[in-house]
Length: 118
Image 1 (cartoon, helix red, strand yellow):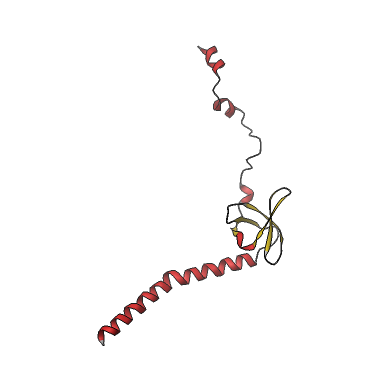
Image 2: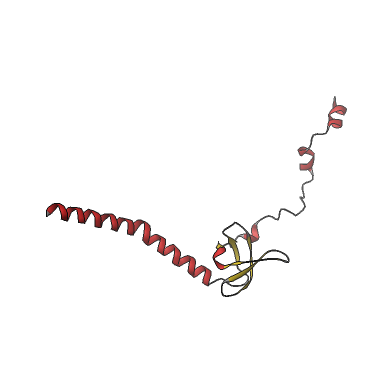
């Protein structure tokens, strides 16, 4: 009888440990994500699960429209949003012209220039 009670207590202890360290934090994270998805509004900067960054332009019951570039709007499910991103405005635009023109000279090897210097 004492052995059965010890086995039940150890099984109960394992279940409690799983609950505290695995199940409870996952439930908390799921609630936070659901609240974030529910609170989305046009103008919010978001990141999708696939890593696409953009601004919410319109929301329906289960779909969201994200503008990723001027005039380019992607239609996706609400669940495709990974998180809000407040720092999108600080990202450098890769299509802007570089102000430093000296970088181009360092990137390319010019044989004619090498022959002139020899």
